[in-house]
Image (cartoon, rainbow over all chains, first blue to last red; front, side, top):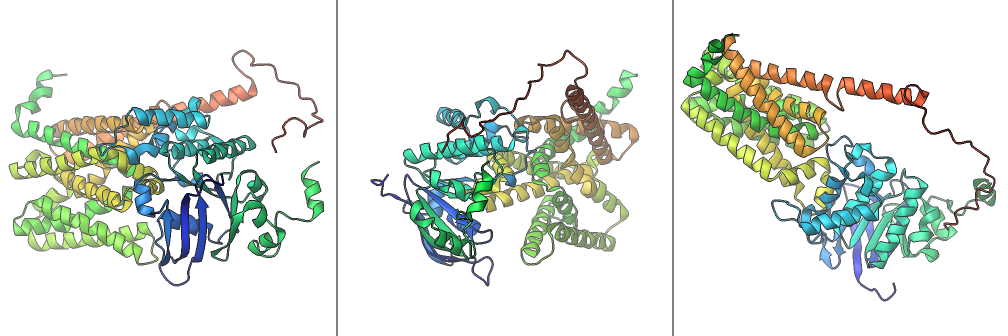
Length: 259
Length: 313
């Protein structure tokens, strides 16, 4: 991966405020290279989702710049470079759309103005469904899926979009072990394809299995980012999580976890 | 049944016109209703339809086509709602309630000052049987615009309604889509004014979509079913009102409500009967009643080496 020096995401000195008053993000810096996975870790309310929204262009920075593959966010979005996988609770699950239609929505930005899918769009949708193992469920209405399957469907949509920077918001939230392993494998594949990923997660234990780099978010800014092993020290995590590292808990607790 | 009596209404020119106009209105409203109910804009539809009243009165005073005033006030109400909501802590449904009742009251006061009772009921309850040439053309043009724009943009509008975050993330301008949908809503309401009147317009904008929603899980089918409901109830309602001697709008809405109730009870998957049947089937399955016994229950044995099998780390 080291030969890949394309900078996928470049957050420089970004400060953001909702409405007015207090800043929700203070002079944050972050760099994610192509073909690498960056984990985003921090307590609730530390600024993870603000950072996500800023990278998505939903919140304009007061100061600083966000660039995606050297372009401003809006242009990168129009070019289809950014794929976003939301936390799955955000949509109406009774909505009358099938899994296939949801995945096709990933292609919509690339279609002509009448939004008629062509052969390439159909192929991409089929392949994406295949990659997340959702072929058999393609014609189901989205509400008929289990939690893990819902997650996979939305991942497939991001795959169909063929973005080069993927933003995954809590991909492991509320999914079973099988799905979470499938997601990790998939991230490995995407990484080999040269795509960059920014992944927010609460699951510190699995960070080392899939992240090249980790960014620690605390007190509305990026405390530190760098190679996973270097960043995930007891000291750094303690600073991020307000005093004690959840990863480096007392030994007795670790014994309890495995019989 | 006396066939002659049934065919009698069709001899009259005003009846065939009324049937065609209400079928068009039924179609336009049905298409919009699919978006309105999925977006959760029922109250917004009610609000805009009431808020157009002063616009209609002003058009009447100035001798303008009624669609212009109505459309202007429709947009005004939508902007006022958006403006107040973004600048205060009051919740959206409250703002909607405040704005539309204010405008509706304004319209009522204007009517009471300037015109007779006949006009009041005409605007409030519609009068498709007495539709004049000018109103006919206004309705057809406004309806055609609303229908064509909505259908052309349906994929983007649907994506916006389903998942605005994703729509935005692929570079769609969701602010514009929001206003396009609101504008089409206002235009559709204007279209339906002459047929069902201010008070019942909202039924046309909700019921066909709601009925279709109960009958299918696919949006493309939902559109067709809603349109079928819209046209069917428009035709039956208008036709029926001939024999009742009036209240055309109310008749149309009544037929729509009946269709909704039928779907609510008999819909193949989401209807009451189907749901009940499915519950029973599931329960019977669990209890092992009815039908041949399913696969023998596996005998559980204690697994001792739980950590051996998968070495995923």
